[in-house]
Each structure stands twice: as C-alpha cells, then as structure tokens.
Length: 95
Image: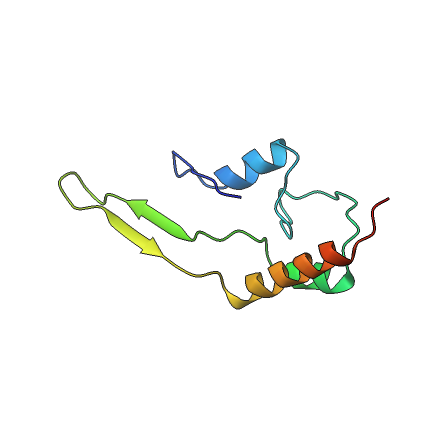
C-alpha cells in the first residue's frame, strides 16, 4: 500500500488506516484483532513493532533550498514478513 501523508502529523497514517479498518500488522496502539488466520511465524515476525516503512521521503527543508529525497530499502524483518505472508497466502485454502 502506498500512502502520501500531507501534514506530517504524528501517527497520521496509522490512525487513518485504523479508521478505515486496515490497521497495520503489529501496531499495538492503533491495531486491532482482525481475527486473521496467520501462521505463528507471521505473528511472531510482526510482534516486535508495527509494520510501517517509508521507502521514499521527499521534503523541502526551507524556501529556496532544493528538494531532498531519501530512499531506503525495507529492513530485513519486513522482507522476511512479506515472504512469510506470501507463502501463507499461497498455501491458504479458501473457506
């Protein structure tokens, strides 16, 4: 999911997703029990912190100062979780 926050307010993405019934996996403050059938491995991988990562951040530090763009790859625990979720989805049986 891609999000484009406009104000930079604290918790903005997390609150909006929670209100939309799409809370972040592992978010202890704004998350909720969605009764998802996730494997123990997935739940353990997400238990350490909420799963939110900014791939790219762009901002202008001050008027007349050039745009600053910072890009970062997801951390290893995110990649592990994505792989686990992907394999979990492929092995899930429809109900």
